[in-house]
Length: 133
Image (tube, rainbow, N blue to C red):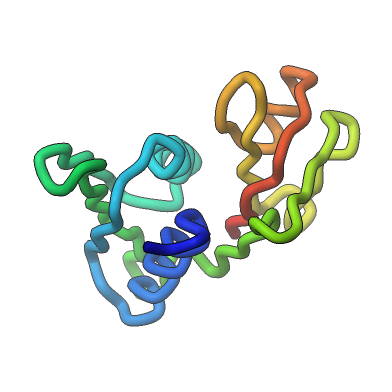
């Protein structure tokens, strides 16, 4: 059992990217599924598949995305911000800008999990889960 499942999710994806894998499997949860959908919508991963028959929560299969010419991974860095020991919250007006707008912040709000830009436009604040760029 892990004490921080989101950090485990980010570490599995980060390790798979660094090793050059095409597909990575992570244990599923509703929050991880929402983060995966955001990564797909923002163009950081190629595709994903939720397999509910494996385990109590199921598994998430993620196809990682690489540049066609240089074979460099699209995900350069994934950084956990809010940890179980120190939660980081941000209001809609103080939402962080990642790499001057080139990266995304994934935020858990009362309206659901979304990017920092979406939270800013909907005028909701929340817990900043991670940065991806």
